[in-house]
Length: 359
Image (cartoon, rainbow, N blue to C red; front, side, top):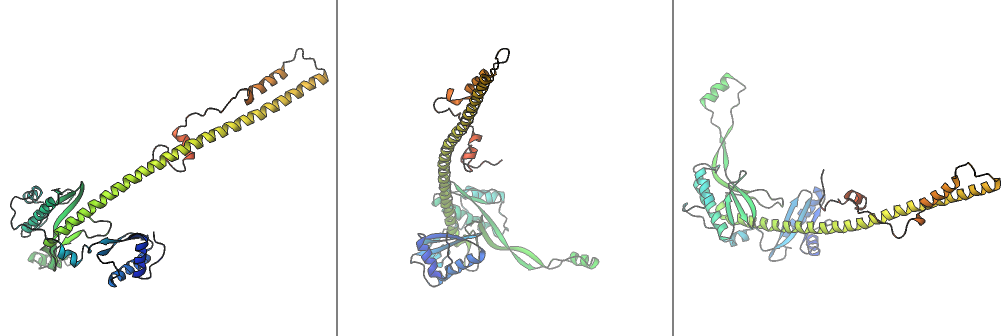
């Protein structure tokens, strides 16, 4: 976590070098804006090392900066160097998922744009197969699901609408004349023929929507879509591995905490037993002292013991019964603790397992 504010793109690059090529900083929005401005300056002045690009991912109150090899995924150089994905001219032997899209009419697309959408989907499925991935039917509002090494990403395919002036109908005009508060829409929304391929948003802020534009069409971006899915699959595997390691480390920490808690419990139990024995020993000595004083008083006063209870003998017997020195040898045994007994010694850990238990 960075602690100082950047003053220029140079200081940002120095911070990246100190962090081994990447670092994350957090703070208020105004502070993060200064970091982003420093990143823009570093790009504008050409401070990024040759053959690398500066990746910036902003999320809530933190920003991650990283130097990565190659051109930026959205750069013109990257797009020109990428091998175009072949798009078929006609739908011959379609992929099973594309066939379902065609036969079940699950594409929210106008009739005129549907053939091209199916051809683009077929090209995407073919490229995914070539890369060793799998494409299956979409769920939860997705038209397709791309599977990369067990990681699934849903893909939505839909069409953008154009807004055109509304031409009031005779019925609307009559209704308006009859009821002055009637509202006639100003615009109509009609299919534009421009397609959109969309993945679910990624928290790292990378592109997740590809659409037909003035300069680029989806035909040229199929490879970028699959590249993004592959990147997410790698990140998901890294996250899974990191989570597994976190759980393993947490389990080791918990086991160590349990062992220490067991030792602390035994020490506490022995200390409590010692205090109890000291109290009993002190009481036994006080009782004996009292018994001796009582015996001395009998001798001085020459009180006849006949007919009176043997109170003195009972006092001495009671002192012997509570004296721990007469009935204890060695270290006392400590009963095995129950989980609840260990709670005071676990410093916030649960005695039932390494993961938090919510009740």
